[in-house]
Amino acid sequence: MIEANGLTKRYGDKTVVDHMDFTVQPGKVTGFLGPNGAGKSTTMRMVVGLDRPSAGSVTVNGKPYAQHRAPLGEVGMLLDAKAVHGGRSAREHLLAQATTHGIGKRRVEEVMELTGLTSVARQRAGRFSLGMGQRLGIAAALLGDPQTLILDEPVNGLDPEGVLWVRTLLRGLATEGRTVFLSSHLMSEMALTADHLIVIGRGRIVADAPVADVVALAGKPAVRVRTPDVRRLAALLATQPGIELASTGPDVLDVTGTTAPEVAALAASAGIVLHELAPVQASLEDAYLQLTGDSVEYRSTAADATTRPVAGAHR
Ligand SMILES: Nc1ncnc2c1ncn2[C@@H]1O[C@H](COP(=O)(O)OP(=O)(O)OP(=O)(O)O)[C@@H](O)[C@H]1O
Image (cartoon, rainbow, N blue to C red):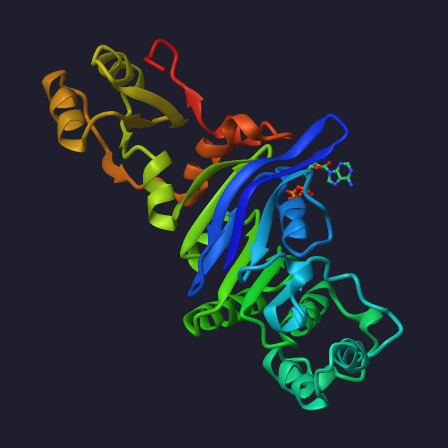
């Protein structure tokens, strides 16, 4: 279990982690989501004692990380997959870490088997692809058979097969009762991997809830309407209280604050032909953008271009 209380990190006058309180529970995969620069890596580094909090505290399995006698047996971490000695083979890299921490050679072979590295055990780690490097980092994190795993962007650079492998591995580890805490900016991946989400923006928690609740929290149900008479329908809907409209295509409207039967009835009353009328489930992506909308440090405008408000409609 990981427990943070008032966890804060400042660099100069910039507060990058701002009084965070959270608990990462065992037996679950907890996703740590946030836009670039939100403070995910800084938080994870404080959990494992690589950065010192400016205020507040964080414990892993009941103690600050530094107070654990055999930290590798408590916490496995992957914070920077590139942090390997490039001249060493995969096996040498793992053996060096194992020896330092009193872990036997057999465990090195086990984790290489588990992470699919046995066939490349003699290859120099410096020549590994990003994906192989991630596997090696995960192998190192598993060396001490830890109760808690902390992984910063573990699927970064993996091909689809690798992503599936990580997902299955992490779910299996959580099912064994371990605490699995992973950061990612890949919403779709988190939807499939995590049970629980902690979403942050600008160093603050904006959501801490099961995945389904995060989606429900941010995403209002919407109705998608396709009609050749889009302007007239938009004008008609705009007269209704509580309805919001967005144009997502030349003949498509996304309508929130109403139901499909109500839209159908309104359209029928005005003789407007509909080609499509369907409820739209908010995705985790939508929920995330809505939750972190105000807290993105660097945003491209591409996301805004796909959903334009309709002129004259209520916003
Ligand atoms: N050593 C440092 N000195 C000064 N500022 C730092 C330092 N480390 C991180 N920061 C700043 O802290 C903020 C949070 O960075 P952090 O790497 O924790 O975010 P992140 O959520 O992991 O982002 P990303 O997804 O881009 O990795 C950023 O604005 C970053 O520039």
